[in-house]
Amino acid sequence: MGRLGSGVRRGVIALVLFAMSACSAQYFNHGYIPREEDLAKVTVGESTQEDVARAVGRPSSTGLLTGGAWYYVGSRFKHVGPKEPQEIDRQVVSVSFDDKGVVENVERFGLEKGQVVVLSRRVTDSNIKGLGFLRQLLGNIGNLNAAQLLNRN
Image (tube, rainbow, N blue to C red; front, side, top):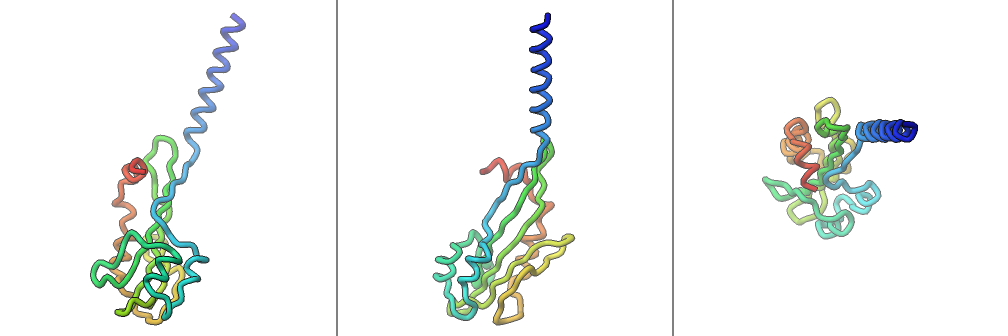
């Protein structure tokens, strides 16, 4: 009986440890956001699209209306136990180009209380192009099915 009780006790301890580890938060990153060090290699008014491609890579999204901007989008998800993953952060880096393919603006956007917020900006022109597109990228947090995104990778 002593051995059986000891085995049951070990099994219960293992089950409790397993249950506790299943409830710890796991974080997943999706997309790609260039680091500030890499973006520093991009000079507004001098760098071309090829220079940007070498410094930070090509994006998965480009400007839909004019084709004059590249968008890098990254999201961070928190997944706890059996709950659905929750997006906790999203950032967009926008690099826009003039008609000759030279960098006009380098901007980093994020969300704060559901509103688009400029996190950093290096511009030659203060007129933000494609802000409606950026609002769409950043504003769709509640519309994503995070479980499908996590299972896709």
